[in-house]
Length: 371
Image (cartoon, rainbow, N blue to C red; front, side, top):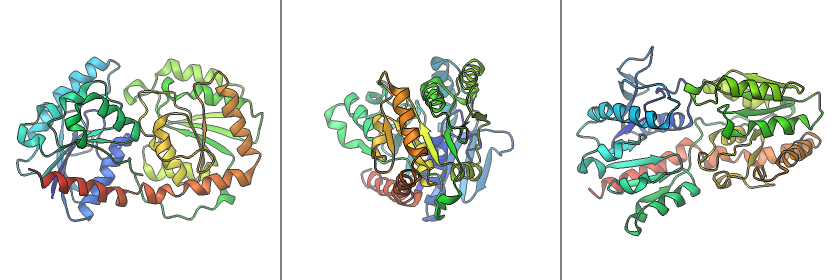
């Protein structure tokens, strides 16, 4: 098949600035090529990358993109400008189009819409009713699939499918838990919706001088963070605890080294509508971190409380106490911590790029057979 992937306007491909969606589709693109398919990848221009080139068998076509604006209205306008340029790069002979922009499914011709799978990686906000002429609406989690179905007519429900996000790598390493360090880790955007204040306050209740909390990720607004003021607030909150704020790591191999060292991973997101999957917890589980997440529905597709992870109620008035108790339970009981971490390693099979690429390709074949 000839597959065209259209990425968004704000992050480059290869995913040099990170981005869970970008990492996933880039990994899938490489797997599609390995399985004998032709992949054209449309993404934003970026310093050091040619506008037209071939990397790892993927044909790249780049058009002018933008930095992430603070205004959602401006974001949609910039996305439109980008999409109008990107659509011109789609070959007339392509068999499948994967859309990662807001406007592309609307702008495509009726013929192209029949070839298009829309990647819905965020909670929909009313736009799904405009997308029903396209072939598939792919949700990355059960809550997203449910939300999509709530926005469209019954006659289109069979177009909604759920395929989870992939791990952006294949981890075949044997984890030596004896080499794990006394590190509690968070990786992701440093933004108020991630609940980092809860994590910092909970960590402070440990009173354990031999454990460190590492917070790794971007805080700049153009990278999706909460900005300088928010970072200062967090640092003030953490000033009496053994907490380190580290620069974002976009190189997957270097990020994996961080996961490999950490014993515990915490993802305390409070984003009721913004969080739709949670690749960071999945990555941490794949490297043997005992993982704790908040009580968002999206995490329940892959994390089972008291089996392969722990889940605390972020909506509770005693949420800091609850998370703090889980941290104490794990740091005081190495066997419990390692047992949970070992159960989590199964995500290396259930969410591998190879396995889920096969599911996507099956859907692509189904789409192709109907036009």
